[in-house]
Image (cartoon, rainbow, N blue to C red; front, side):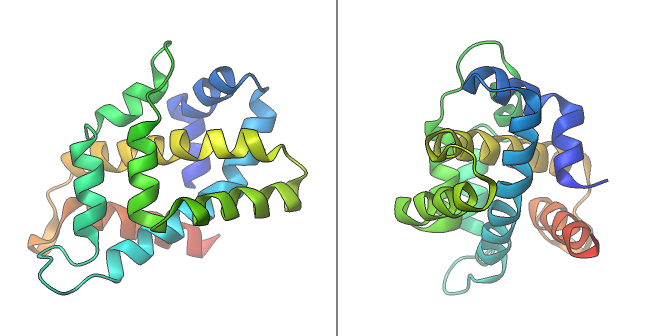
Length: 165
């Protein structure tokens, strides 16, 4: 199962659609176009670390996820009230490095899909929260083989699943 299907089954896509005032088909299309950039950014964060970071590049991302509430991030997206997007923006900052990259991703996806760029910009942090929350929940359920970070293991399986598509 791919990440888009997982987020659809958790109800995240429906919740995001409702929050943004778009239909679920539009939200699925947008998520399908945005997810590769989010997962690729997480992959770069996970493999591009070094220095004094004991978790490699995953440290900043793990800090944003765990500091933002871990698995509670997904629940925030699923809640019937407006999602506090700052946590998602923090995650995007960790994986993309700047708001300009997030804007660029939204602009490119808008150009490819014909979807509204403003809607895509609003969707990015919510989608990042849903992905991170799902990863944190799965990480809490796994034992983290080899002494590595459970988040790293989940990210690896997500990236591997995207590569097999």
